[in-house]
Image (cartoon, rainbow over all chains, first blue to last red; front, side):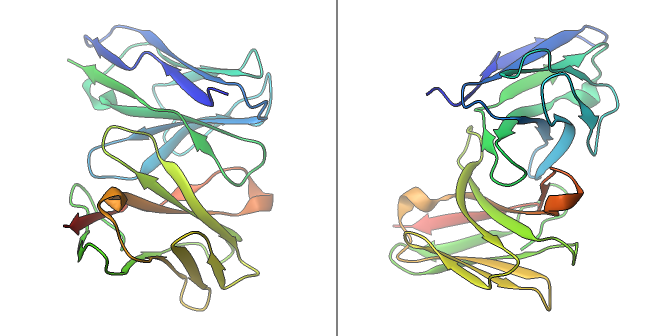
Length: 111
Length: 113
């Protein structure tokens, strides 16, 4: 099992550009999550999904959209990137609302 | 302990000593708690968890203690090793009110050889 994988690992964007971050899990988990982590801080939940075809807002959803068209994939989109979205993005998945398994992260810089 | 802004609290211990990392959680109704370890450049890695109907749980070299009266969680690492150097996060969840973990700010553990 690869666990939770994220694509890409690094990305640099210019302000106003758009991009999609891909998260994939091979553990047949129902729940998937997107977090951002800023320097010296904990993780903040952006959006999450409790099953295929469903999504919900987390703590910091503004400026992001998500889709869960397939159970194993959870996509995070930035329609018009801003420097404030420079961060490390982590995806996670879980089989219930308890232990979450995290991916290796995507480091995004918006210039 | 908890951090604010860019400055993580740091715990520095000698190799072989025991480490205790503390966490104050926010919601008295939370019924599930978890500790993660995050090494530089990597994603958080599960260490140990505990439900609110317990006050202590032990794993391999790690123990989590839960004090619901004062909303306090601690992680004890026995015989700390250089490989334990990382940032440690606690998180809480209210299981039947959603599927979201709320993370603390993290504590950096530095192990001196």
